[in-house]
Length: 357
Ligand SMILES: Nc1nc2c(ncn2[C@@H]2O[C@H](COP(=O)(O)OP(=O)(O)OP(=O)(O)O)[C@@H](O)[C@H]2O)c(=O)[nH]1
Image 1 (cartoon, protein in one colour):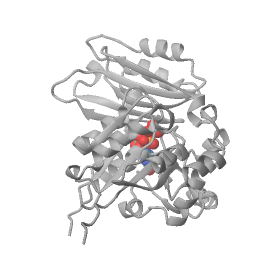
Image 2 (image 1 turned 45 degrees about the vertical axis):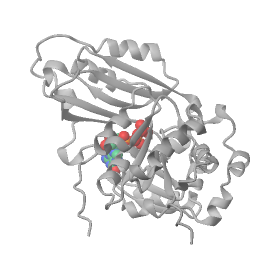
Image 3 (image 1 turned 120 degrees about the vertical axis):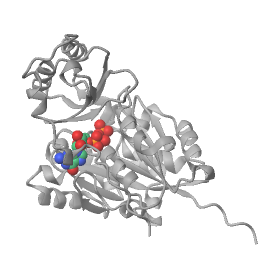
C-alpha cells in the first residue's frame, strides 16, 4: 500500500465591500478557531497595510501581507502560489488558509486564480462574502455588480446587524440574491468558525466555477470594469502629531466620495499614552484608543479610499491638521471623544480562545 497523500488545505476567500467587516471577522476566527490553525493572506488596497497590522498581532508568523492593490489584478497567480505554498508546508502546521481580499477585489478573479493554481497541497475552499447590513442598500445603488458577487458566494455573512433597523429585510434580500449559499446574520463578524471551515463548495459548484466559465460568463469584464477601477487610494504618513480639532473638521467635512478611511493617528500632547485607530465607512466614524508600544516611532498612518477623490486637496487638508504644539488645550479632544466607542465595542475584540475538548 502506498502512503496516504497529505491532506489538501482548504483556501477560503473572504471578500466583501470596503469596510464591511472582513478584518473583524478574520480576527474573530483567529481567536475562536477551536484548535484549528489558520494561515492568513491579507490584501490591502492602500499602500500602508493597516489590515495586516491589525491581523498580524493575532497571528504572528502565519500571516502574509500583500499590499498596494487588489489581489485580482496587482498580484499574479504565480506570486500568490508562492505565498500559498509557504503556508501550506507541513511544518507551518496550518489547517486552513484564509485570504482576506481587499474591499474592492473582484471575487470571481480570486476564485479563478485559486482554481488555476497548480499547487497540489491546497484546494479551493469556498467564497465567503461579508455584507455591511447598514450600508447594503446604498452600496448596491452605487455598485449593482455586488449582486453578482453574492451569487458566487458559498457563505454570506450579513454583518453589522446592530447598525440597522432593517436587518430582517436585508437578510431576505441577500437570501434572494444568493445562489443557494448559506446566509448568516452577525455583529462584529461573530460567526461560528465551523461555517467557514464547512463552506467548501460542493463538487457541483466547483464544476460550475471552472476558471474558464468564470472568465467568460460572469460578466466581470476586463480590468476597466472591476470595482476598484473607479477608486483611488491615498496614503498619509506624518511624524508630526495631528491636532484633534483640525482632524475632526477634516472628517466632518469629508467629501461623499471618500468612503473609507482607516489607520492610526498620533494626537501628540492630547493623549501621550494612546494612539487612535480610526475607521470611517461611509458616514460611520469610530476612534479606538489603544496604548502606544513602549518603543518605536510614533507616526500617524492613514489610508483613504474613495471614488472621484481629489487626492492633492485631501493630502493638503491632512497636512493642515498637523500641529507640533507641545500643549493640549482643555476641550480639544471633545470632538474625537464623541466617536470613541465604549470598550465593549473594540474594533477587533479580544475573545479568549475556547478550551479545546
Ligand atoms: N457597529 C458595528 N461595527 C462593526 C461591525 N463589524 C465591524 N465593525 C466596524 O466596522 C469598521 C470596519 O471593519 P473592518 O473589519 O476593518 O472592515 P473591512 O471589511 O476589513 O475593511 P476594508 O479592508 O477596508 O474593506 C471597524 O470600525 C469595525 O469595528 C458590526 O457588526 N457592528
